[in-house]
Amino acid sequence: MSQKLWGGRFSGGVDARIDAFTSALSFDRRLVSHDLEGSMAHARMLLEQEVLTGSDGQAILAGLASLLADIEAGVLQVEGPDEDVHSWIERNLTDRIGEPALRLHTARSRNDQTATALRLYVRTSLVDLARRTGLLLELWLDLAAEHRETWLPGYTHLQRGQPVSLAHHLLAHFWSFEADARRLRTLHDGGFRSPLGAGALAGSPYPIAPKRSAELLGFVDSYPNSMLAVSDRDYVAEAIFVSSLAMVHLSRFATEVILWTTPEFGFATLDDSIAKGSSLMPQKKNPEAAEILRGKTGRVIGDLAGLLSVLQGLPLTYNSDLQEDKEGLFDALDTAAASLECAAAIAGGLNFCPDRMAAALVGGFLTATDLADYLVAKGVAFRSAHHLAGQAVRSAEEKGGELWELELAELQEVSSQIEADVFEILRPESSAGRKRHRGGPAPESVGDQLEEAAGALGELGDWLDGIEASPIRRAYDEGRLAGDAL
Ligand code: ARG
Image (cartoon, rainbow, N blue to C red; front, side):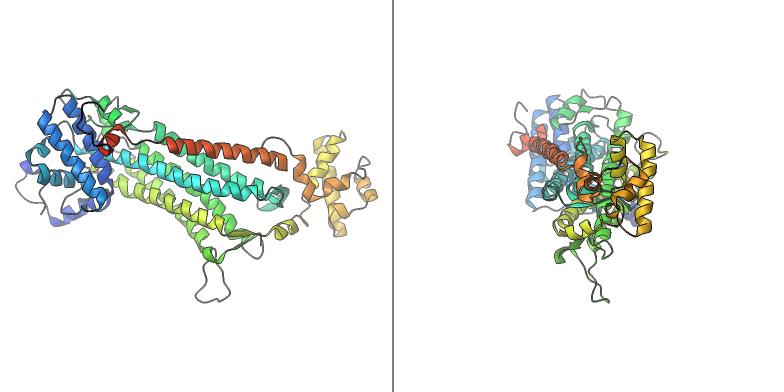
């Protein structure tokens, strides 16, 4: 049985089954470096406030630094009988520095400690996800730039609607992914307050400085309320939500990969490197990665539902239910990270088939709307023009041909305002080119869009380049953790 942090009032040991069931170490050990960082900030604040003596404070900071160095060098593993990573750290710190280690928990509880470590972990993960999203966006932009004049049908209701360029289609996904990166940034920059100082729930009687702890950790602020500080998991919910929405966006791309690589669509083929075979049917080349990507989306949405279910109805303040915030969060963040990489691999291994896309422009009367717009330009009200163009579609359908295969006289039966210049309008390849406004599919609009997209990508890159470690982490990196000024 392990040595507990709280054994004083207990005379008997804990049932091994209870110990095993309630232990968090197997999953919360991934918080170790973040918890050490949080502990350094706490110790530093206590030292500055003279709650700890100079020699105790120095000893604690040096001990925490030596643990972090060994963890990061891979020479120390987080394992043992401890009930969670926080207990593990206290035991190991005590082994290293003795008595002063027992003073680190002054003005702190595992309740504000775990909440601090988890925030630091989430904050780092958001940057990692944003970086991966940036790599995907870069690849995507290059792909789109190659296909400004590759035409294919744009769909509504999965029925062919109007011609667009492949660049325009790809950029629609680009902007969804870009919005994901933006959400990650917003959450990273604004979503984190420091719970340190909240103690178990009601703060502490020492002259602590919660805002200083927040500053040392690079958090936007401390909490205005200690009870909220230990029970708030909004940032966990937000991180899983942002991950879920990113997964939803990836899954929409995945479905298109699955559809487009069917022989029925044939808009793309899969490079061997991203396809999988069948154990029975020798001819198969399956888009398994895209299917699994789509499947994992359900799982991450499940993580969100799981966390919200844990949180709903919890009374203030800390309850052990909150320990269940972690595994779903880790799963969501890990899955989103892996999925972003997988999506980049899939995008890189898709071979588009412009001929098949062009062939799909025929047979669906994709320029019927262009005909209506042509009549509007001649002064016909749109609703009437819509009706007349519909009649032209019916004539072409009855004849078994395309709109542009109708005789001018046949078109003039629909409307006497139709002239020979209509045939240019009826060509699917010309359609997108007339939609030249911002957000439109004309090659010049798409050119502007590509520029705008490159700008957004540059902004994301600047933001990523500007990410700094927290002041306490920088002080550790530079070996001035216990120095005068931080
Ligand atoms: N391992 C716990 C968690 O992850 C932290 C400890 C909370 N405090 C307590 N008295 N059990 O939430």
